Structures are given as structure tokens and as C-alpha cells.
Length: 340
Image (spheres, rainbow, N blue to C red):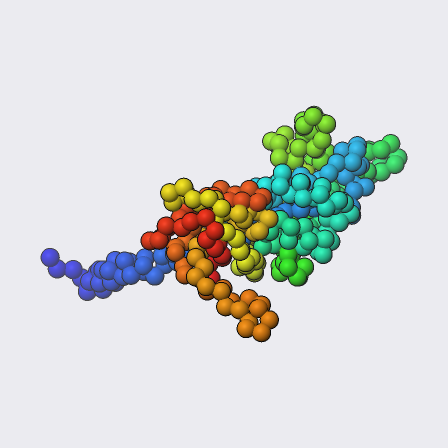
């Protein structure tokens, strides 16, 4: 079939464009997502956040003092665990240490005190923080009377306007050995809705035997204040996850002995107090001779032969259970040490 000269030109351009589409599609293809962090999780503890700066506002909002610092800390723990970058110490273990150390609420944001708590827990880092804003950002007009308070709308007057809940959090990752701040982040959240009441009128945001604030409840989450809290916590968690590479893993030297042998199952005389954790791999060796100073008799060096290694499966304060892997069967009294 013959085409007029102009038609042939248009047809040629159309064909060129069609042939170019595959390469254009390849060029426009989105870049592959970066691989997930495959390194070991950093062991951390999260302290209850300090809320002294906003305490008066909290009392006005809820009608009584509520520990919003604990509530935000609990929510942050959940986000960090789900993020996969950190292994977070259980709340019960943290509370036990805090009680033993006579920890005061006034110490929540103190780096030195937090580092000491973290060292006792045997974690790589401890996360502390403060709530710097907790309330709402008001844009309003008042007519007469006593104005527009944080806790209620229109005290003695008529209020008209638009307000959003705003929550801001600052968090720091503290090195448990040096009390050095390894990372500092700030998370801020605002509600996407506007309302004259931060928590609504139902009172369904309370929970627990003492009627305390349950910030993880769906009722609280559905308020504009709950929406702002969640946004602030999400932002803080994302930044802390991104900064996980700044956390230096604490290397604890484990030195102990095999206390019992049953097949390839070993009971070791070292546990949590010595820095042993489930999943740790320890060297199992046998002492073959001792080198002493010929003048003083002081032990200069113990010479050992490595038998194999053992992976810890259970651990308590003073002992642990491990599975042995090696050619030479271990026996009671063999040496247990951290792998290099």
C-alpha cells in the first residue's frame, strides 16, 4: 500500500516512538529498595519520658495528673520492636532494676543516671527523652467572658475558631559505658482534624485498675490528641531506627566454667549478671598448662586448647544453658569465654 509523503513521515515517527517505549520504561523503572539491615539488633532499654515541662497542661487537659511520659514510652517501644533494628528490654526487667536503684522520676532525662541503669541491664544503649509540647495549636476568636482555656471551651464567653492537637518529643540514645549522646532526634505530630475538645467528652481514654491514662487504647487514638501523639511517636521511631547504626554494641568479656554436661547440653556458671544473653556463641576450651613467673609464682598465662563452641539457649541471673558443637566432648571444669 502506498501512503502520501506526509503520511509516511507521521508513520515513521509513530514507529520510532513505539520502538523506544521499552527502553523508556526501563529507564523510568523505580530503583530497587535498599536491602534491610542484616546486622545484629542493638540491645536497648527505653526509659519513661520526662513530662515536667508540660505537666500543668496535662493536668488541665485530663483534670488530673497523668503519666503521659510512660504512655509515650510504651508506644515507642512497640514501634521500635516492630521496626526490627533494636532488641528492647522487657518492661518488667527495667522496672525491677529501677526499683533496686531507687530511681526517681526526676532522673528520667538525666544521661548519667540513665547510663548507669543501662550498664546494670547490660544493654548497648538506653533511650531517654522529654515531651516538649502536649496540647493544641489554637486559632480562635473569643467574645467576652474569660476566654479560651486549654481544658475547656469558652469559660464565660463564646468561642469560635479552629484548633489542632500538637505533640512534640525529643529523644536521645545514650552510650551506657560513657554516658555520651550517640544520637538525638525530635518528633512532632499534629492532628489532621480540628476540634474544640482534645480528648472528647466520653472519657473512654482511661483504662486500667487505677483509672489511669491508656494511650494505647483505640478510644484515645481516635481523639485529635491521640492522633497527634501517634504521629509524634511514629516520627521519633523512624528517626531512631535510621540512627541505629550510630549505636556501638557493647562487648562484654565472659569468663566462666562448664558446671554440668549432658550429651551436647551444657550448664554454664555464667548468666545475665555476667552479660550472657540467649543466642550468644561462647568458646569452650580446656586448660592444658599454666605459665607462672619463676620468681614470684604469679600466673602469667593459662594455655588452653579450644574444644568447640556453645550457643546459649536459656539464661538466668547466675547460669545459662548452651548447646555444644565440636569434635572433643567437654567436661565439667572446662573454660568458657567470649568468642573473639
